[in-house]
Length: 204
Image 1 (cartoon, rainbow, N blue to C red):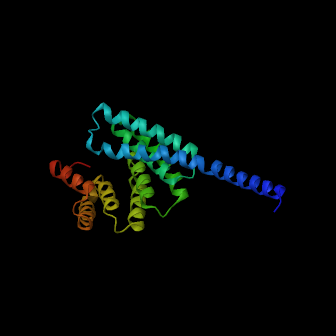
Image 2: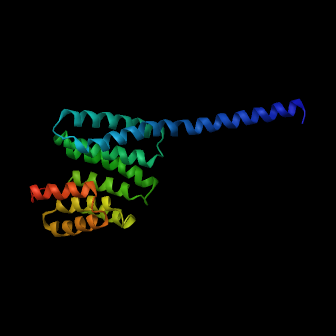
Image 3: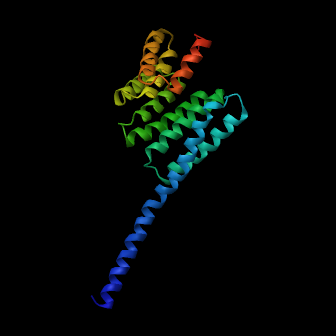
């Protein structure tokens, strides 16, 4: 291969590398925003919603997740995490519960449009619809979630929590929670829900 051929090959290779970087850069930037935001949300499990820190950290995480989905609109997990942060923010801003529920539903819907087989995405839309008082539609979402992940204890805990919010479905909620704790006796979410119900049996 002559010098001209080698230069042409190098030019093509450099162009391919540049195109690949242009394609993957937004994906990498989105994930760099999403992962810490989700970790921050998960750590809020030990923080009372009544503390200013709870709302502040949620708003920060939500802002990062909004940036993440702008950079990579095809990141289903980022959309689901945005829905999660949005619906949790209602604990800090109860006057906006329905509004935040609607926003969370839109984000969860975007996640589901990208991957319907992910149980977590169904859970997030169920939570969003619960926040709006749309219990029947939320029930369909949680049922779809456990259908997708029948052996996942945390998914069953979310379903149980939904059922406990319906006065007429508490027995079904006990069944779902019991099944979750049989799948994973040490499941933190399940144990927290069991403790909450022990303290206040009427609590949702």
